[in-house]
Length: 84
Length: 84
Image (tube, rainbow over all chains, first blue to last red; front, side, top):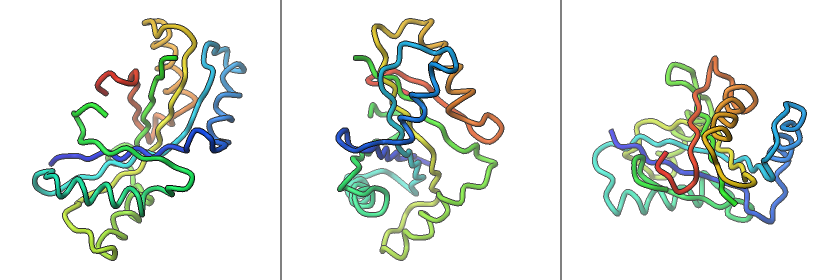
């Protein structure tokens, strides 16, 4: 069954405390060379049948309403296997 | 600056209540044709300099220790722009 991926990330101007916590933990773990960490969500939706343009449009709508908060988050929809 | 993405998803045999909640909400929103939803996490790491094999190996190690719980989650590391 085709899988559609929705990536939801906090917008760049929004504070991301979880990402900051990870970033702060890195040097304590002896890990250098990372300047920024952002944490978001990944949804994998298994779709019945083919991913037509119409299905894709409906998932885009879903991503904008149920899966993300468009005030503070941005989202990206792609079919697994296709480049994001 | 190159961006490395770490996707962390609950393993297939692990119950995913957040994904189930999204799946349950879809018909109420008039959305059909989705048979399964899994919710995981997406981390975006900005790396200073080039993503060498060594940097990649260290991020893999990080994904396995700090970013995921390997008992219940699987992870995938890829450089943004490259296929996952």
